[in-house]
Amino acid sequence: MRDVVTGLIENYDLKGQYLDRNAVEALKDYFGSGVARVQAAGVVNANAAAIVRQAGSKLFEELPELIRPGGNAYTTRRFAACLRDMDYYLRYASYALVAGSMDVLDERVLQGLRETYNSLGVPIAPTVRGIQIMKDMVKDLVAAAGIEDVAFLDQPFDYMTREFSEQDL
Ligand SMILES: CCC1=C(C)/C(=C/C2=NC(=C\c3[nH]c(/C=C4\NC(=O)[C@H](C)[C@H]4CC)c(C)c3CCC(=O)O)/C(CCC(=O)O)=C2C)NC1=O
Image 1: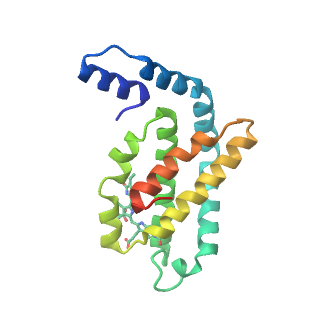
Image 2: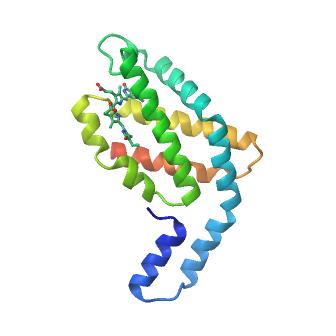
């Protein structure tokens, strides 16, 4: 699992090079957004249960067939599994935000996920929609907490969406 710093060091060490201007720029960006990243993780932590619950409600409102007989989230067990998955996406997104690197998502979340979903008939497009709903909620909450530039929050959610659906946003 890497973060921006360890990722850069690993790359430059492989080439046997000092940290050059590009590396320094990347590090400046990362440290410059560091406080906001940590604050955002705090906001996610404080609101995680509500975010998952409300994003789930919104998803099932938009796509009610998911929770009707025949839908993949029908039955209490599968409904709970769906919300649990949403919680995984949110928690790992918060790690990736702090790390400034998507490595943790590749390693812990996305590996083999598509295959698992396909084999269980879990539909990917609605899952991606759920991830995007959570992104919007997190951005609103973080903005409301007074953090001005919330663009960096897109990254982990969009990364999961892209890797998962293998579709361009
Ligand atoms: C931390 C990394 C990690 C992830 C990401 C993860 C996902 C994950 N979701 C699963 C199931 C599931 N995932 C869903 C999710 C949904 N169904 C829908 O209709 C919605 C669109 C969606 C919610 C948004 C459902 C319903 C199941 C149960 C499917 C079944 O057993 O039939 C399973 C199969 C095993 C199980 O039920 O626990 C895995 C491995 N597990 C992990 O360890």
